[in-house]
Length: 417
Image (cartoon, rainbow, N blue to C red):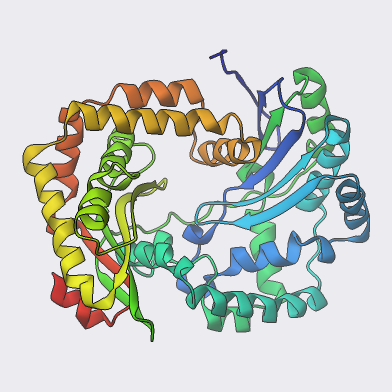
């Protein structure tokens, strides 16, 4: 694999710029990642970051010069996307190399010349409420339910979509105050990926972003107290979506890759333990998947299944039996080698997906790290079976357990444990 290089610079206004050359690419990927998301909110303003994204970064509500510039880009084939997460708000442009100056100009206007219009706010309010209703009526809510089961009504436990009463209540003044305080150059990471010439690109970035000035404000330190719990959203369906979760490790932990490989051995594919046990041997599920999540402030290992409601006790018992087998007997070298190979392939495929590559680069940057595929592959290769077993014994314990489900009542889940 050819060597990877990330060029980094910090402008006098605090903006951090990261450029990763991918000379074989035919497009340029640009992303602005602002380190402000749901984790930085309180219950009283939960959902404000997502509302700001709808109002500020929707092309239909931008000031006319910005809208015209972005529409020119889109008309020329460029792609634009805005997104809010627990840890950041991002907006990205994918374009042809000859469009990069237009794209940088548009992105700089988005962050430095924004305007919150009352009509835009009122236009987006019912749309966000529709999104809220859709979110809570589908299985997409499960991941955030698990966050809430670990962290409650604090930081990482707050839903990105926010609380319905807040969506109804938010005012123009609230959004303007939040945006002016926390959507600043000092909290922003500009990430670029593609066939870019380093010096000209940095000069263009400085041309369009260097004059972006605002008074930085420090966000209050998020309160993170992990208290695993049980939560359910009852439905009239005969099937159950269940997630069994265990407190894991944050992004900065040296055990991050070991936990990810443990999840892969458990439920990372058709050869994984839980797939063979639950689906192939006992035929009690169709879907079973294990994965790990690593936020800056915490993390977890999760096992998701979908089964008939009547099979729920059996499914849960079989999962626990398999977890005990790993804790007491460990895993084989063959299992670890297979998990490593699959994870290595997944990392290498990132190089073939520039959109995913950019998103990972930005996520790592917000978490004060750099994403190098070859480094991640080496870290995976260094994990040993003893490391996996140690993490299993430390993580897979009753005090670390959280359960969430879509379908049954909460008392049904309580009976499982």
